[in-house]
Amino acid sequence: MPQNTCPLHGKEKGALLATGAPDTMTKSMETTKEGRDFDTSHPLDHMFFPRSIAVVGISADPAKSWIKAFYLDSLVRTGFPGHIYLINPRGGELQGLPIYRNLAEVPGPVDHVVISVPALHTREIMKDCIAKGVKVVHIFASGFAETGEPDRIALQDEIAQMARQAGIRVIGPNCIGIYYPAGGIGLAPDFYGEPGPIGYVCQSGGNVNFMLRHALTRGLRFSKVLSYGNACDIDECDMLDYFAADPETKVIAAYIEGTRDGRRLMDVLKKAAGAKPVVVFKGGYTAGGLRAAASHTGSLAGSDIVWDGAIKQAGAIRVYSVEEMVDILVALLMVRPPKGTNACVVGHGGGASVMATDELEREGLSLPPIPAEIRDKLKDFVDLANSMLRNPIDVSPMAAISGMENLMAMGNRQPHEFLTDMASAGLAGQWQRLNSILDSWREVDLIVYQHGFDVSPTAVDEIMGACIVGPMVLAAKSCKLPAVLVLHSFGNDNTWRSSASVRKLCEEVRVPLFLSMRGAAGAIAKLMEYNMREPERLAELQASIPGRQFPAA
Image 1 (cartoon, rainbow, N blue to C red):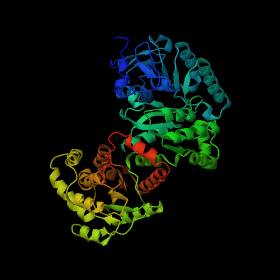
Image 2 (image 1 turned 90 degrees about the vertical axis):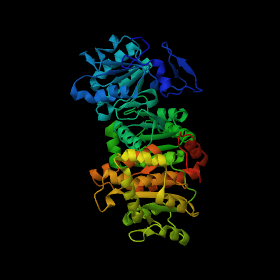
Image 3 (image 1 turned 45 degrees about the vertical axis):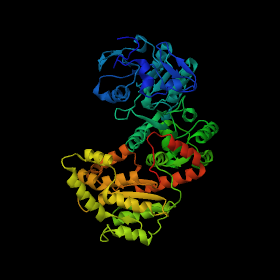
Image 4 (image 1 turned 90 degrees about the horizontal axis):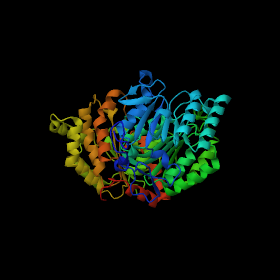
């Protein structure tokens, strides 16, 4: 195979830019000996544009299959265009690739090394990296400073010093590393290869997986992601500074447990929030959480009062969970900010409607009563029995009739196929009539569509979920007012599975989906607050997202 092709799947190395990496940057560029261009204007650019990646510690042993999944299968799935080298002292072969006994045996240059061996062996591997001229080392292994043991702290310091003297940048230790879909660098085989606007820096490896799996199924996509662990070299300050200037990143998310340099963090956080929306989840904000953070990544977390003040002073948005972070990102990227606080709730279930009202009003929104003329129009086709027509609006009778009509129309089609066809045809019938009436209500600023799957008096399967809730998704999509959809109340596996096709539809037609009314209310409130402070920045962000077009008002 020619030297400028990947030994795993034969792609030309120069194909990286064709897969979605920036090819029109105004930054300075360098060309490798193999003809591949990459950006070098920021010190961390090399980290995302390796010509080759070596995985040290991989093996065919089933007990270590997770290493293969993280650092081989994910690269294959996302189409990494460079060389992939596998290293293990036993040698052998894996998935058609030779396993070299050490880095010295690798026939070509190695830019990026993933070290997945026990901590006590990393010193020798680092020596091999230095001899090979490696640019970036990612230490997956744990068992360093986070243990609190003096000898392990000394080992981490020694490795960091070795790397510093050799000019090697280190990710970790105790982290899972990089996800860069545009460059074909995966992280887990189930992560999407499609890039997006979110840059995410996360001190925890587990919270990278947690965040991405929640976010990807909600229609969110990422530019670059880094899990940095103990931060013996590259830390949250470096990445916030990088994302502030990165043209592929339009909004920044950060999970931080602690920092070594509070003053620098404040400076780069201000810089980042002055350029783009920044969402910060400070992990370890209680006394117990501070102790957990120290044992997790060896972080010096500091007072939560100080952190809270610093985040607010910088102009960033603070959140307190991964779920809240995803909700805020959905709002920032997919929800047109309401002009005022008047909301109308439309959905199924009287009790769910009451709870929705409480959640929205506790976040500062209000639900004004429906004017008599609007209510009279609704009464023409919504049966007063088992409904509510005073805001919130419970349209269960209408939805049931619509659902049965859809069931008859579905025929032999699968739920997702039927919903795709329905979306292509556009909103029609009584849901279209309802939307037209709500559009004429001039005093309302926001429509919240909601459906609780467990409130059904009968067991719900995916077919009925698609027939009854599918039109609501399309109503939220076509609503001329700012609108969100809340699908909630998943009490068991059956109700969660019954929502699969409508959740997929939300992702495909880019409807802002929330999985709890409390999450939706909080995200809307923070969106409105941010829009009051930074209306031009929010408008610029939303205009920059391909395919994000709101219905004409």
